[in-house]
Image (cartoon, rainbow, N blue to C red; front, side, top):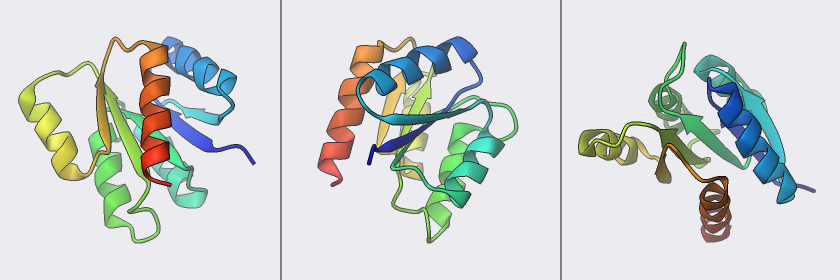
Amino acid sequence: MKTRILIADDDKDMLDVLAFKLTQAGYEVVCVSDGLAALELIESNPPRLAILDLMMSGLSGLDVLRKVRANEATKNLDVILLTGRTGDSDVDAAFATGANDYITKPVSPRELLHRVNALLARSK
């Protein structure tokens, strides 16, 4: 059974590139374009890992992460935040909220794949 990964990003080109790279690496990838859809999917059928864009319509990646960590059923989900924001306060807020990793855009699909593989290996 393939490991299922959710990618939530409102940038369709980013979704397509990341989904292609992760699918090529053997993962099952589900893509959504906003935070509310990400949260609904996580709560109804939790993936093994969620990659959330920090700045999305509806709910931000940070909002989704807060709700995921507050829910007993999803609190241990591995979450990577993906963002163009590089400020120390943004990084601090992400990790303080419970992000497992924080990746800044533009991101190399290869680097993302390495981070995903490393995170999944650590949390087995």
